[in-house]
Length: 322
Image: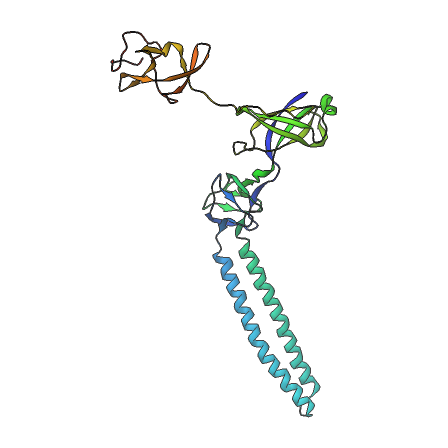
């Protein structure tokens, strides 16, 4: 019905960066690694932040120790006030000290939480399940949320959810009315022209590209295998009805020129080159394709065969490859 060209694009893709600024201390992944949500991808140097966290925890313990003394002081002031030995001002001072210590404890707890968050920010975690596509930083480089110089990096890796692959195809404005949601499609990748993947129109993007006079159409896969990768070029055939699946799977065949075949004692043979000598190999032939014939048994892909066999060639004949 209609064809269009496009590219395979992961609909869920992220350039994973750090929320903190620091030197990259460890990188746990390389291109092609699969990660789960929450896995630690990389780690920044955290010695100074750990020191700040220890200081905040020590400060919290100090204020908690002061709280015990403030409670005892306020308790004594209350008892003396009830007995009429001390004044209300003394009790008010003890109560104010107690409240100041409580406030200092809250401040110390907040400082501990802040230091723990800063420490967690030195860990770069995977935001979702996916596969690492590219690595943008190496151990020893400075990493910042927004790269401030050429020597610093913002994103550490780029990853994608390989289950969210779709083909983004550009369809001419004049043909867009022929496309409807869930319309069946057939997808062919330029890398594997013999493979055809069944698809469907997942979304028609509601805007046009004025420079190209096209509208982007996102085509989803019904199913696909590991050969389908992001950024591969593809062609989409939009169908009026679902295409029938091929009756026989496409297969590769091994062929040799007809001139490479010879008859020896009523058997079909070819001569391969081994150690600069001709070696006779018994073969089983299949279908003929013009000037070539299929070899079903006896040879393997990559074997060097003599393509012009004469009566002078026998098993063990010395040959010279030109």
